[in-house]
Image 1 (cartoon, rainbow, N blue to C red):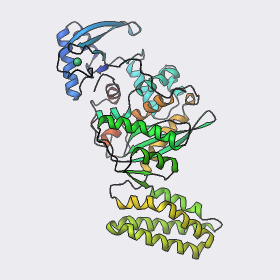
Image 2 (image 1 turned 90 degrees about the horizontal axis):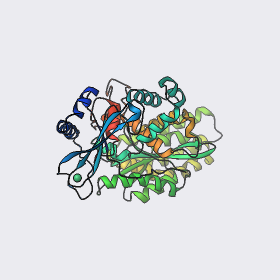
Image 3 (image 1 turned 90 degrees about the vertical axis):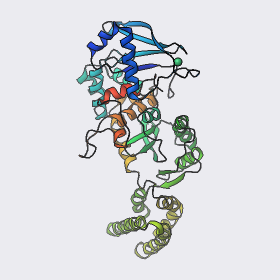
Image 4 (image 1 turned 180 degrees about the vertical axis):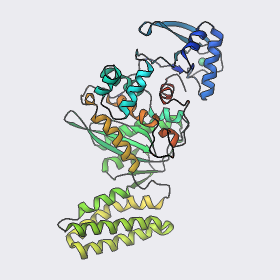
Length: 419
Ligand SMILES: [Zn+2]
């Protein structure tokens, strides 16, 4: 199975916004103006070009060679070269997609429709392209790591995050999508065929490595999970010293399952009492950890009175198992309390996978496809309420995007030639 990204040679493509096509064709005839335009654009982004390791990037750039994109009606594409390290950058104007014949307007509409949950097959019908072309487009976006794109937008690496795995299917086989979320952005969307700690460690490890490459001193302070054993084990291995909390809302939803053979109103009343307990514990600030232990004991006694000893025993054992994770959430005010935002991200991804029948074949490029979907989730503007109207997830979290145009942002930010 092809889950890893194949890298044949260094991708130093950069997408440059020439505003309109006429400007681009005009600049083709003037080498000096062409280079100045590119340098001004790169500078305006605040990015640097990815020179070779030995080069400080202070040297000159020259036009190196050009070729014509025959399938695009002979559009001339220039390559520029650093005179010091001889790194060659391919300059794609904003109206050309890397390795693709598809026009950006078509790609933009098809991606928006995919992101909105329309199946690849239907997207292909409304945009007059093949479903496979759309699938490959999403995979191409997924060649660039999520961490790279998000840090290019100025987002700090997350010191607190939510982590959990989405369960999905590939044909009849169960597969898992290990996911890391903070607020409205996905930092990691992996793919594993097993639910073992080893498999999850490998997947979350990709995020850990990418983050450490950005900032060698990167440390995670707290992670919220739903308490699944393989998840906590893998996170403990990768982020020693991080506090691992357990989702309080998850706890609330689990309680009724611990209460067997009692009338429904009694079960509902107990759930409501448990809700109040967790809510009050959160209000207690400094005292809340101590308060929780005492309240849990009282609650178990109350279960014994109303639902019998067997239920009370089951609830006590469950408390014993989970309470450390709840304490952790309550002890650190910066810890996320519920995994709601992660569930929202999972639901959004699930709609696409459900609509994407081609995902269900074992030879697909699952990992690249999922990363492509993660980029869309982070960069497509989203409007739920008036606050943050028209902003993408990255902007909601305080990041900045290069332009007003989400699709151009996607092209620029997933370019391989920037550092
Ligand atoms: Zn150089």
